[in-house]
Image (cartoon, rainbow, N blue to C red; front, side):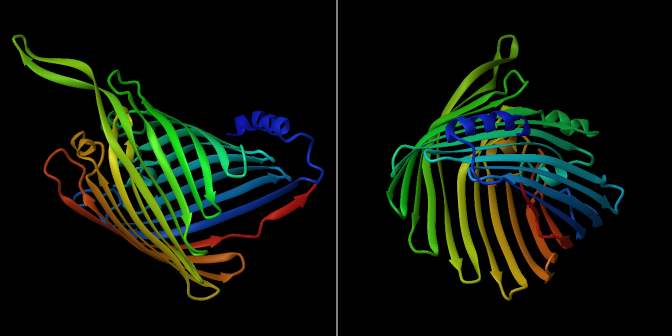
Length: 402
């Protein structure tokens, strides 16, 4: 995203007119955390060994802002030492940037980044495929532009790009997890029917591109977004739609010369939908979220996935917060049959944050994950229990005005 900064600043100057009259502001906000945990089954495998780990996680946010623009850069690092030699030590890093511009008749947001994550951190429950020393590299970028046509109408354009690849010593999974590129584009018109209600019909087109000859998939369709605030504390966001998916598939047939293979284009139509119901309380919030959509995988596969999540935060005092979440992820049979994901995930997490000093926080959590072992044979249930404790240093940002 940082490579887009100069172009984004140019767009902002053209659209915003004269430079801002007020001085720009720079800020620097470092953070650091130390984690210790005990995990019964890190890789969600059969007959896994219990292990402990220590991890260090430094990060920072560099930010520049003016009256109409904001630019931020966030480096993030993580090193994890695991007690059991069966598990490889983990290293992950990322660098993300964001640029936002706001004018009288529009808003522009640019995001981008590069990351190198251990599959232990990135693939559960993204694909369910994890192995010692196996990492995922990704480059991603997005653009969102909103043009205010009137007080009640806005044109919304969104573009995104994801380039993913895998590397590591586990060649079997590396071959299965072939890299892919995922491009999306959408155009919508938002109608503000009332101050509390908006409606946004959107056309979209998504494509998964892989180096495999029969791997590319494409999805095109229509979504209708609805947002409504019932009260100051209760709000609903929902969408519904349909899409047509086309992909290249290998078809096997038994002919006079034996079993023959042919590549043909398959097309199907599916329904999409989801909602987020939010309740704000005096001391926290509660959110219920459901999504039924298509999930891209390596090899050009796009499979249906349903996710139901309940999460909440409650402050029992000025210094202590309680956090709870539970989720059910259900994957389509096609992803399971190809061996690129598990059939389901059930997860639950309970945590507590103690802000014992102005810049220090102690976090504790207990989490459980239940799923089935990733295998081409009869699925076997596996369960992971994890207990973790983290000490975080979060100082106040250092701000300078020029």
